[in-house]
Length: 518
Ligand code: KIV
Ligand code: ZN
Image 1 (cartoon, rainbow, N blue to C red):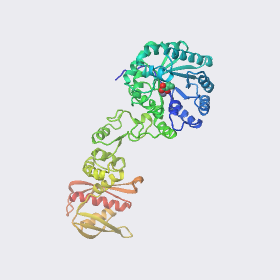
Image 2 (cartoon, rainbow, N blue to C red):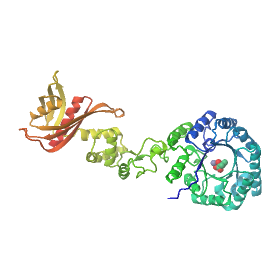
Image 3 (spheres, rainbow, N blue to C red):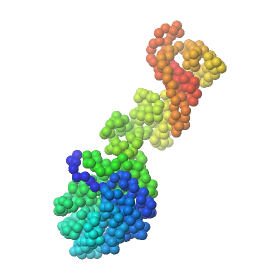
Image 4 (cartoon, rainbow, N blue to C red):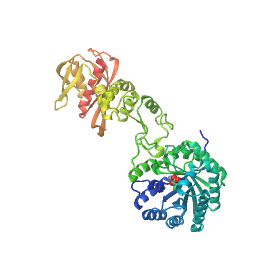
């Protein structure tokens, strides 16, 4: 593993600027305030609140949020290297205790030529002038950040880019941001550029990385850039941002935490934040989104289910990157049953629903469930479907004796049982201290003698499975002979479920009897 570093990462969130500018429906002031407060809960170190020059609504939001800012959080606004933009950022954010103007200009050969249509010397001059103007309007307060837009596309002109950085630092820039404005190449090529900048600039300058996710590697690029010397991680909630988005904060935070880096965030707020932001942005979370997707805690293959079950409750799980509780997600590993699943899934699912099952019983019904899952392409079985098979195959072990009905005397001393025994319907009568005792005496009329070892009963309340308010009885029985000699042979554990507690007991008894008769 890469060695941990003592340098604390600085989480600078760009959701309210880069994320917002890419929304179909950009946030208004009230919506931005919700996101802003969530960022404070997460404990980020810096928040880019917007692009005040973009619209009157965004200017008002930046001003409002700057007024709400606490002492320990940097509040920045984005400005092109244009005096009007810079002045507007300052007018909006100067209320913050730690204000920052963030100005940017493209430095890649392609963009300078085709978009800015400026010669490199003109670009450098404009950047230095803009940083100087930032310093002037700020009057000694706050910090200035300069971004070389399209830095990831500057492999051929790095000497020039470093020259620009040195010049803007001399003009007063405190933070140099290296954006991978469009992700086109390998993370390690970008990281090599970061290393060049880290070597070239004085130590007091903070190096930031701001990566976009066009090829799906933004997290890798940001994380590796940290180990290459970048301190400021520019990330977004839910990875919101232009095109495929900005670097996802949660992924960076968890990757760094797994590498033993001290992550200065309240990571337990992450899951809740992801759900809220998805709602506020009206951008659903893909079910396979790392860490926060609804399906990423599910295991469906027998091998993975076995590993997950064997490492349940351990700090490191066989098949999970993090313990979900790290990000405040209550749900741990979830097992789903499909045709790919094994007995462990049956065992864990049935147990998870509060019902008794042994691993042998789970193994016995797994092939039936597998077949059911394959039938008509049914796929993953619901809990109710699994329980139906459990009911049929485990609770109602089929055998020569089946329970049909029960009536009792008002004094509850005499019971009448309707049974089918070896295909013949019979009415039996039994007297006893209770229904089980009476039933055992009734069975003696047809030559079946048993010894009751143990009896327990519990209430089941699995409402969502239309299992509401059921009684579940368990009975342990052993055979004995007609003369009442010592019980001997196998011991059966019978289970019975019914809304009527007396019937649940009788069912459990019949269940155990059939196991012994088999
Ligand atoms: O992606 C980018 O280059 C930006 C800059 C303005 C920092 O968002
Ligand atoms: Zn960006």
